[in-house]
Amino acid sequence: ISGTGIPSWAFILSVTNSTTAIMSVAATATASSVSVTIGAPQTHAMSLKNSGDGQPTAHTLTDFYSVTQARQYAGMQWHEVGLKFTAEGLLEHSSKGTGLVASAQVSKPTQSFSTVTPVPVWQGMVVIGGSLQSLTVDGEITITRQVEVVEALTGPQQAISIFLGAATAKWKFTAVMNDDTELTRMLSDTKPQIDFNFCAGTGASAAQLDIRMTQAAYEKAKINRGKAYVAIDCEGQGI
Image 1 (cartoon, one colour):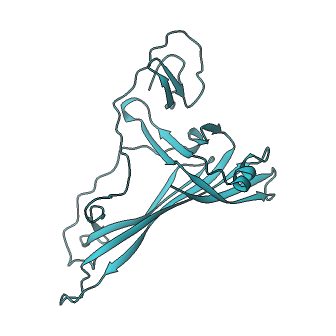
Image 2 (spheres, rainbow, N blue to C red):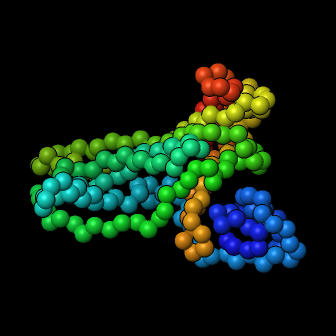
Image 3 (tube, one colour):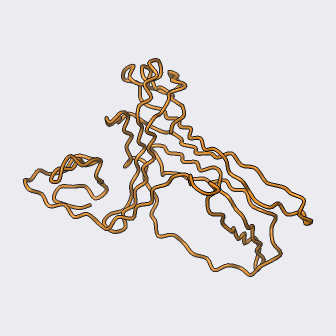
């Protein structure tokens, strides 16, 4: 989005009505009747497949490991996605997958690189229970699915498929402890909604990642005195 006094990295946090929207950051200037330009959205809502066999689309992973040699792993299923962030760095991502036995050698694939720019974490935000929480300094989010290699009497040693089961989402974050807010959430078991929201780029090249847990259960809230300031380490699970 862009408009008078709106920082280039800002995004819409919520929409109040047809003429009012709440931005992720405060404007750098004031004006009346500001026109806001919104770039073309590229939205990908992630959810589990709850129809048919319940299995996501399998992929083929090509591993190029030498000058001309490469092998392919068919039936690849991704069963863990991890996000790490710290206010001093960039948003980091890792994934884990399991596939079938590798193929014979194949030709080197043509490389293709993403144009998405790195996401500086300090531009992100954490919203808990509908309110902005501006004290988080780092954290992790891990989404995992149960995985099993399905073996059968088929003749060859190749498995017939990689099967994915139920999904779980675990999170943790460290925040500056100015009061007992986060400790109280754990003690009272309120299970608020938590949004970890990150963005990068401007205009048509803008990208945003919003990890939303509609119910986030606090399992631990430990006071951390290992820093110059007092912090609190929170972790739990969400849906």
